Length: 453
Image (cartoon, rainbow, N blue to C red):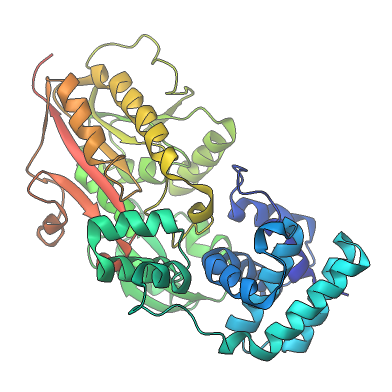
């Protein structure tokens, strides 16, 4: 019998790349169907899924050297069996190779005829013997190919980063993307201080460090329980949120009593932070068109004890319904994007996104900006941000917007950020964070000021 954790990982990995499903959600649904799974088994299934996605490029390169059949001719489910087995051999020293080979063969029996079972058995036995000895491309011979294989990133992405950043920085960025990030949380200062939260977590988390930039953040590693089961989480003392995302809200700099629009609220991580910085005094609209996200947002705000937020069920891909011009003091647009700045959290995006997506998404981002611009008051602020490092989604979007919306200018003074955070804003007024330089998600943001009606 194949272990349930490996079976779950296999089923999640079989969801096609062109699906919009996130591995996190697929795993959550799988765990709901297997309530008997203990925490250790859930952790293994999660590690197998994210490990294969993180290292898929290197795994495929090794498979091509173990198999006489080209990878593109191997049926996707069979290829995923090989990836899953090879990942365990290369990266899991505690799992016996013989068990990996047996599981791989058993999983193939569900999927394919006998000759394919023999093929998988042969490849995996070869992998158990010599996979760790297969040499990887040398940086001195072909640095781009070496990064592609050794750091498991698609060629198109490595080439564009090398052109913009150079070989060494691209290598460091890719290495950072392959690191398992800590869980970063934000203390809900409406209820507790960061120090009080830290003290409440010492019995539940092995390692706790203060975030370097965000004033209310903690970085956590080594959980004894699921986050949702920690008492201080249930009591609304904290929200899971990356440090870079926390800084975006500080860049917005909301003030008590203001009218604020969170234009792409999602699950409401930044919405709750906006309310927190306003002492829950003011009027905050959280715009989101997916009802299941709105339900999660409302549940989260209730847990945090926030009452200043009302929801706005609307899809920004169509024009904003009639609303008073200049209705909001500040608007945050966390626009849909490629997500190429958060690959360490979502490694599946490496294999799902293409260069063409950047052009398509740029059109959406501009349309969203043009839709909400009239809602900003004279003298008000509009923060545009994306979790992407690509200029098509950052610099170029802002340049095009300002060319057509002359009533806006870049607000050069990063009010709201602490002094140590201000070096994250360059001379153009653009906020940039990155995994390899700052150990946080890769974000681009800019604060725009409306000077005229």
